[in-house]
Amino acid sequence: MLLRLRQGVLRLLRLNASPHGIALGFALGLGLSLIPLPFVGMFVALALAPLLRASMPATYAGTAVVNPLTGAFFYFAELWIGARLLGVAAPSWAEVRAFDSHAWVDLFLDLLPAFALGGLVCALSAALLTYPSVRAAAAWVQARHEAEHEDEREDEQANSSQSGNLS
Image 1 (cartoon, rainbow, N blue to C red):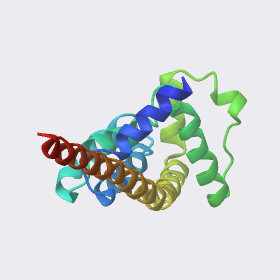
Image 2: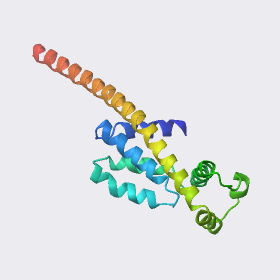
Image 3: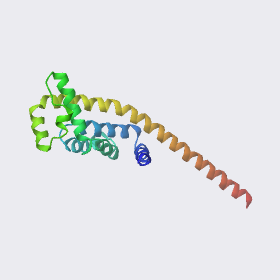
Image 4: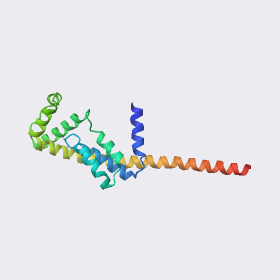
């Protein structure tokens, strides 16, 4: 499983896009997917990506971080952060863990300011943390990949000139 994750990350970083486009796409996708309304952030991120010249595959990869398995955790973290910042009470993780979709909607409507503030803090934090790290990683991986291909081209040229001298 870790090997597949590593391969997926390397494919993302080797996309035929600039390190800026890859980093912007991933940060955009992750940041906007933290809007505490499932799928809204994903659609907004994918709509904005071409306008901002962000990599579409990287944007989609960023949105995939918040998914049906991880969404409840992220949304609860946003609620918790927002509630703490506003000084309002929020239910515990033990309580919300058992919520169905209707209970989540009721909670969202009751504590909308806390969700909104927490979502904004998390989205901005995620974007500010992921953009520079993904950009640096993409630049490093792409430079290494280009250097490997340059070595291969030099070897091919050397081999072809040696074959030409033999004839």
